[in-house]
Length: 589
Image 1 (cartoon, one colour):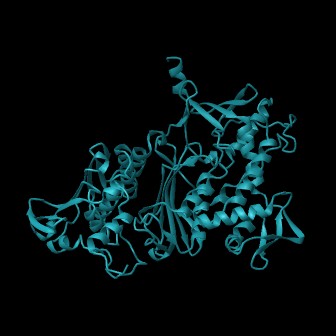
Image 2 (cartoon, rainbow, N blue to C red):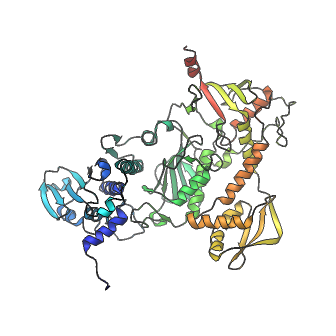
Image 3 (spheres, helix red, strand yellow):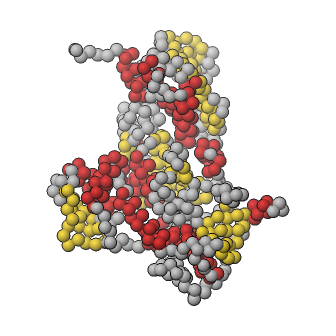
């Protein structure tokens, strides 16, 4: 068969296969166009899951007759003034969305460029005919009978309900990316213009996040030095800037549905960001659970390539390892604020329902300007319990001051729980979980014991596996594993963590597979976490162990000064607070 040039309509339908996967893709592309046009109010109406109708109205700048005629031409865009693909600051830039959508549907566009005093115009995208219109301002894009021109694609759509949920998710992500813009979907999902971020997060993620999100102040990386600031004006020397909200460790989901990640304002699904988020929560949450977040990463446009996929949901970073490290340190610092520095309340509802914070404000904040994780170092526990055998030293006498956030010790019930009283109400502390967290943080703060090998351990690997392992060699060194290339198809291990009996060949293969799949590896750090967590669990005060008043008071004072005090190493709560008003309600007072 001879080579021939394809006609434009077939080219557009092929492009639509990349850009327009499903109705949610259409909604996403059209909303992004509206945002780039300067709209601050966008109304979306959808029927039958987007199959029969997608109608999007915005109050943006509108289009002139010339722009309206060009907008459905392939690779026609107003967003690349210089043609520099490494300096993209708009949501869209490829010029493929409108012609691709028009090629697989019946689409009309009504628009008016009000600032020029022009009259309204209407474009029939099937015929290219432009007519006068009574449209007053902004733009309306009406897409009907999606995929009617490509029936094979139509039968691959899921149910109307499933497609509608995909549209809702796309709108939510864009609504979180621009809290200054109002969004209305089917007159049911409403996000008001200028809505405070706290309220928008609750509206999108659910009422259970109220008061349970941690605010990340603007964390900047300037010339390789990270700083935390409340200043919302970007530093011109800033390399990276991270801000947003993450869930406290006891608030989690069974999936990643409520993880919203943004790079320079663009919603993305990026393996570097997802991996960094998982690593930051590694020692406070099970790997089968997922934290909630709305994280915003800002960096110079030349540091990230957004021209990776037609859907523009993936990005490539110039220095992914540095960005991953920066994000992990920032999130861990936010999660490591000791209890003594948090002002929070929890309420417990009847019949053992999950406790929730009761705060005067929606958020509590991470460390203030100039502070770092070093500021919140783990205090040496008072010698009231011996870590070697977990038997308390009953001879120690600690003053029962009751001045900390967890208050004054009242007693112990079931030889499991410490009961205390603070200004807010009754405090119930799981003694094992509390001591387990204290022990774990002490162990984690110590230097890893390394064992130099007299004879290096040589592991045979495939050449591509060797290259992948060496890519993360510095990270492995931080976990106690020193290695280097040994020929083209082998790795030599010169140091390993002491007392670790692992199948190092299998471990390196797992690390190589993870690096090749995601660009990083957390296999060794996860092993280290499990080892420390296991040691902490078996060398802590046990449930069923009786403690005297001094020992209980010392345990409370230590957990107040310990990082990540709200949960044990497995993510279980350490304490609950039952407010006095809740107690009064129980007794109808």
